[in-house]
Length: 136
Image (cartoon, rainbow, N blue to C red; front, side, top):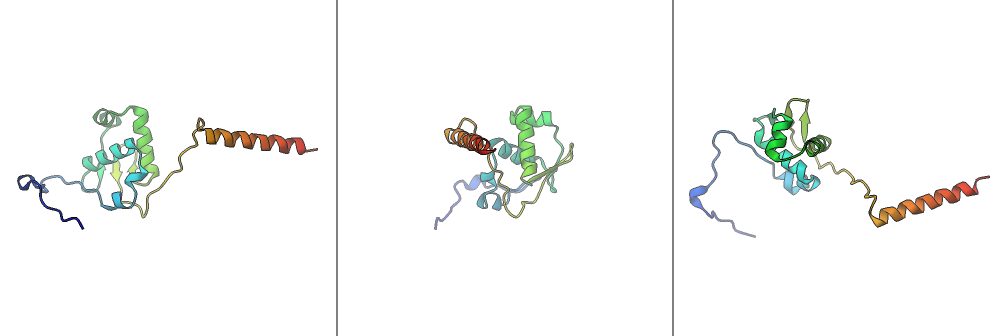
C-alpha cells in the first residue's frame, strides 16, 4: 500500500469561508466516467458555484463565458446532467443533487459513418426487401 506524505507543509489546504465537495463515490463508482467533457466542466462549475444546499443561479450567458462553451454545448451538458440525475434546474436555479444509487449510463447513438453500422443497415434493408418479395 502506498504511504502518503505531505509534499509541501506550508501549503496544506484548510477549509475557510465557502466550501465545496465532491463525494469519492463520484470517481470510485463511475459517475465521472459516465460524463462527457462538457458535462464534467459544467458539473464542477455548479459544485463550485453552489451554496451549502448545492443551489446556484448563474445565467447561461455567464456560464458559457466562464466555461468557454457555446450555447449548444451548454444546453447539451445541462440536459445531460439532468438526464443523469445529477442536477435539478427550474429554468433559473440549479441544484447539484446528492448522487443517485448508481450512474445513469445512456447508450451512445449509432454512428452512421461506422462501417459496422452501415453494414448492419444494409443487411436489415436486404432482409426487409426479401420479406416484401416473399409476400403474395
